[in-house]
Image (cartoon, rainbow, N blue to C red; front, side, top):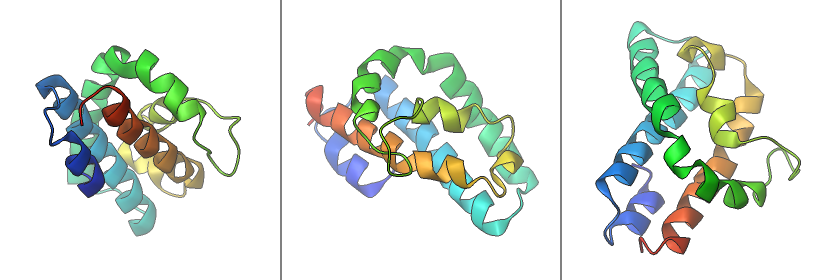
Length: 124
């Protein structure tokens, strides 16, 4: 788990939220790793498929609460952007992150929204 997110969630985050964060962390780390390596290994592809399947099935539980938070986080210097979580996890495979600078630009807005969510929902 991202160190700051771990710090924020140490005060009683729900198991469901913790699972969501774990899968998001996997997708985030893979997006960065694959972008930097310019390739996705078989393990990357497998790990992404597992995390992506979970997020696609379960994101709706937090989507409405996260929306106002990511809407106030810039992507590429602008607030005019789509849902950063969906923008990233709707990539079909981990290999799709090769050369995808736009995906990486969406990661900070998603992380900021997630951390703010932990604070505003009393998980801290």
